Structures are given as structure tokens and as C-alpha cells.
Length: 249
Image (cartoon, rainbow, N blue to C red; front, side):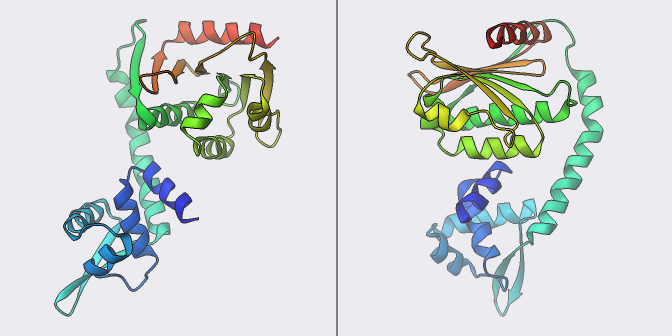
């Protein structure tokens, strides 16, 4: 449970050590002294001071004096949730203004990502983009390489699926047929997912392609390392969507 809570905090933008410090304080409602936090988290004392300063600025931690020393307390999760919701509401009001600044030409917008954090950013973009679309346009289409993503990001599958289901985003998947993909990608009403399999031997596929909204993400798992590209262009996305549907029928 603690690992899942830590992952959620990291998803919100906290560094790993920051999440550890916050959760340590959260488990002690009366608060902790700096030396106690260092002992519980096994983080250097000098680093603890910097982390606490950062968490206080972000609103995750408060402090008060007890005698001559400071004691640090975690803000309740309900309060944090309210703050985040308010920030999201404020940000959404500015989105139309931001969109006016974008180049509306037909030139594709291309972004590159590297490493596990980069790939996680791509999947966050998938959820964000599909979550903003209405139910007639929010379908996610995936051509999967199967094993590669599961090997590199073992926690991704469950976390991504849970978020996708909460947002009501349906998915169609074309995947290579093997024991792993049959178990993870089988058609499921509960997971609002439809899957068709192709021969792994006849059609080796080493990248994942995600088609969503006006975007196409291509993720490579080959050496020298995991990397991905997101292309935002309506014509490209619609063309690949048509190609997917031809393969699906």
C-alpha cells in the first residue's frame, strides 16, 4: 500500500525522497523532528533540511516549534486533494488563452522523450488528451509490441489501466499473440478493452504505436535505450487511425 501511495505522489511531481519524507510524517500525526525523519527514511540529515524546505513551499508539510526545536507535520491528504483540484480548475480557465498562442499551421508538432520518465510522460499525455475528448472521439488505438513495455515498466500496466478506466477511455489493441499478451490484453468489458492478436512469428513488431486524438506516439524499446516520439497532426493521426481500422477488420 505504501508503495502505491508513493507512486501516486511521484505522479503528482514529487521526487522519490520527497515522497518518502512526506509519507513518514503522514504516519505520525503528532509530527516528527528532523533527526527522527532522517532515522525513519534513512536519508542524510543535510538532505532532509532541503527536502523539508521544498515540501513546505509546495504545501505538503507544515512545522511548529516544540521547545527549542521544530517539529514537522504532513498536511492531510484531503487538504492536498482540495488544493490540487483548485489549481486544476484555475489552470483550465487559462487553457483557451494558451491555445491562442499556439501555431495553428499544418506543420506537425513533434516531441521526443527518453528513458522511463519520458515514456511515462507520453502515457500521461495519452490520458490527458483522451480525457478531454467527448465519448465519441476519446478511443485509444494501440499496436503493441507485447513483451517489451511490460519488461521495462512492470508497474505501468496496472497503473495506466486503472487511470484509463477511471476516465472512461475505451481502447482497442492489436497485439502479438503469446502467453503474456493473452493474459494482459484479453478483451474485457470491465477494462473497456477490445483486443485482436496477430502472429508474433510472421509479423515481428518491436515498437508500440498509440493513436489518440490528433496525436500519434511511437515508442521504441531497442538499444541504446527506451525512447519515444509524439507527433501532433490531425492528418497524420487520422490516416494512421484509418490504417488501424483496416487492420482491425
